[in-house]
Image (cartoon, rainbow, N blue to C red; front, side, top):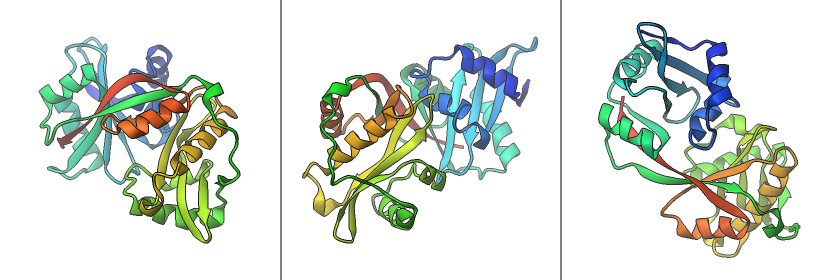
Length: 259
């Protein structure tokens, strides 16, 4: 049996799940719940076998998967989601999962390219943060159009306009916004840094480090749980985050597949 999850069922999953092991789906149950469509696969006696969830409003087809039982099957749920949301067949979907769930996707869906390893990092050493830097300033609403244009130039594909409600910080060189950063999630439950970039002509001068340090400080104003995701191949960025007090907590994968 396939049907939409009730709010009570989502709350029940949230009460028992491991946030760091299912980091993306955790966000679908918390900060992003209002924008999601969540479909459950149930056994004949009503036992939940697993969930396929879709996040509306992204610039790509963003899915999340939460397996509960080994008999969980994704294809029937994908067919249901295609019909329910009128999604285009043969389009590309994307999902970020842990290593165990990656094998399930690869076995049951048509993968179109190798998965990209992603490292989830958590801040655990506040003493590693450098002093406040006056170059880094909070960006006000009049800078929002510039933020959007810069992130588009840097191909920050996960950015959505609703994230402008969270704090953004930047560094200016005259009238040019040369570095900036913000958050994907900014809540008392947890904070996730994101939308971080530096203009190509201004890189390797420590601006990204300054932005990340301020974002981390501001994160602590609302939550003690501060995370970020980084592509595993980006060793320079990983070393930068480690120097600021972040530690690796989970290896994940971005898996692209045909709908």
